[in-house]
Image (cartoon, rainbow, N blue to C red):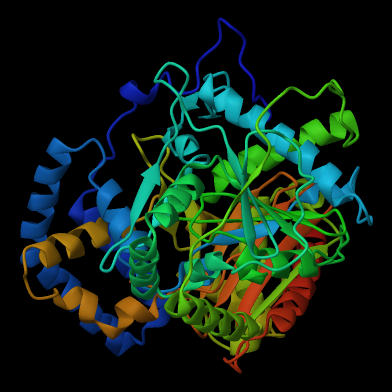
Length: 588
């Protein structure tokens, strides 16, 4: 990922798109046997026997038919899942997406050249915007090197969705509007929209001296609403005045949003909590929740972002923020270019025409949003005792180590295994996005039990760690998207929902988006994000791994009295220490 640039003779960003292999359909037998293995920790002997029976019937009967239809679909589409995933995971959902779907996070620049400092907001926002525009230009001119896993080329299509992209609400289903074009494809919008104090301004020049003195209407608050409600309010907004539609189009097509936020979420390299909370749950009048990228600059000169998850996955934003982080380090966060200002149009305020109905919708949306943000607990701490270097020194895999520590922490608090989702990527295939890994294997649960049992010998515990590492490897290619495909074919054909999906063990083990631990290794860089938990009694658990530390963001719902983010973090810390001690003292 460090190699962002390619020379004139080097590979172009999108040059391999046409030669990527299609997304394969796994064999039915393999997916169902993996499914059975994955649900075992969540079922009693009796329940497991019943589930195995349901799976056998599905495999021999309706599942076989649905699988054949899926194979037919895969013959006509290079990615049989793409449209379905977008619809089922994002566009058909009616939940307010700014809190439930968006991912947000703190920028790491405070760790070096941009510590919190008064009076730096506009200057830093300008420098940050300039570097962001350089990144847009690399993609637009296809000079960003295609990403690879080893020598395998990865799909780059999601990078088209970072800029000039916006989700638009629909009464039954949303749509994604993408205005981005590469240089060879034609003209691409090149304006940004700045939001401040509930107002919007549209500009073509990197000049942020446009802070308004009084509050605006805060129309963007509507983007925090339940999707159908927002769709109807948007239709009403357009009916009041056709100019409102022009403004909406300007926002939708803009490169990205610059949010000038008046809060000072003081954060440090060891504690990013305030910044993460503000990025994920901050002022709704200065973010456009449906934009693929809102760049937030706070009044103390620290930065964050919030992004709609529908058009792309977090690794796209991670790549860009890592690029900006490196550029800022190299320039010490200072402007190193010319001081000459080119003649360009001045920023122009975008003023919506609103009536009493819209004003009332905005006020109600604000109330609902503030209520739901008060319910979300978010922390972001650095575990600084050790990191990747110490774990690898003990011949263990850092990601597996963190996953096991997370599961052990959950087990200590809840006295049972937590159904766990970890993001895996399928970008080796055409338009591939993500797959579910289920790291809570039977081996991992057995290990948690051994760790909790004082009578268990140290070597036995360590052997269990090694065994559970193997268990995780086996789950690296998973089955959840395949099962989703079979479910959706049945739904499209108006068939009754197959028994497999009605089985209580299906949802108890996390199926259908019911995972209690929603986790993701964001990478080995300085960039981290946060998301809300998938279920009310669950946690969001995102982490980044560095040589000397692991930085973790954990979310939980305050209204669930069984979960607490700080308790999970404290248990995670003690689990990490126990595990390193185990790896150091055991004789294996």
